[in-house]
Length: 196
Image (cartoon, rainbow, N blue to C red; front, top):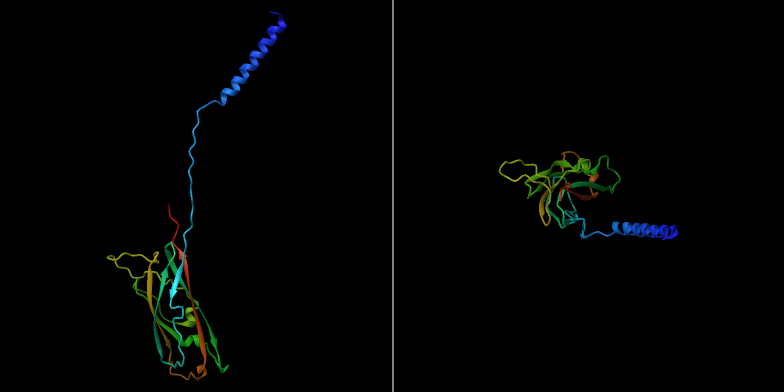
């Protein structure tokens, strides 16, 4: 064999070996498994039974009004807190009020029957505007009872509330015919995140 043929044969053999070497790096066993994952967010859904808790006319100083209402967790997540936000508007018919009518309407108590707690105790609507009590908090400590607050899924808490038009033993004629529209907003928050 002449040198050209030997050189061509060597070059061809080298190229064939190179192709086998490259092809060999891709020739291996393999396996694959696929997982399907899903993430779904839960829901907070607070509902209030008796959206108009109180609607009275012809009030006079000294009158009290006892009412019952309920809040329920209709969502899929536990509600940790329900903060009560108070707002009201006064209609001054005679345009003669020298004091806020809300200072003369007192909330004697707000009692949570399930938690055996009293988130509100003797305050006026005027002062209650500055507060945001948690109405589902358990505030009675007893070592024999489970100490849990909040509102579980499908759980309902019943409340009793008493309002009073305070008779302050002074002239309150300026409030004759006046009105007060009270709005209570119940703001629910979730419990803390946890390891799943």
